[in-house]
Length: 219
DNA sequence: CACCAGGCAAGTA
DNA sequence: TACTTGCATGGT
Image 1 (tube, rainbow, N blue to C red):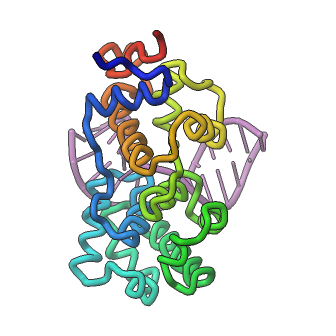
Image 2: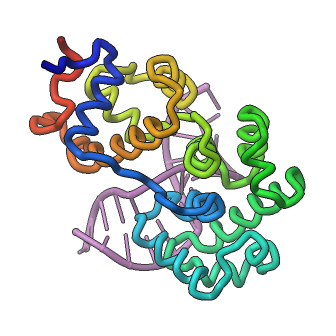
């Protein structure tokens, strides 16, 4: 019979995957669409992001060139449903500008760059923090970067798998140290953590009695 | 009605 | 270094 992994992180992954199945975030989207979506989704329900993307798509403006040529004000109108529209319009333009300045406006050059440099360039963009940068690296550039967020911290600290008092950097390192460098696994795992957090691991929900991760930390 | 959703930057102490 | 606040729409 099949037995659970000795590796705590893989064990958690297997449980979540068995419970929820494949999440397959950003299936078939182009790297550019992922790039835009990564900014639009900041603190925003995904459904609203899809509306904003659809506005651009329907106008035939969902391309690097179109956004590059577009004013911040015009862009803001298209992405209004995603909320924080004026802030996000600026952030998107900042990101486009960085790719023009450092990669000749070629998204493929950015994707082909080495991980350290591309991550550093992303973090220098105003409006791109660690989580957005890593989401772009993983979901748009397909690099083996593990995306951690507040959900990740909450779920894994509540199951005593990581320290309560940690930070983005060390939390991320724990996952990288305990998981194989697998882009598909990182894609699924992050999405599965979001799923379980939303269903079972809310801020005030100490019991989590039906959580698929119940008891995963013991063996 | 309140709360939250696939955060970040700037300001404060 | 570690908090707090502004940003803003739409679903539940």
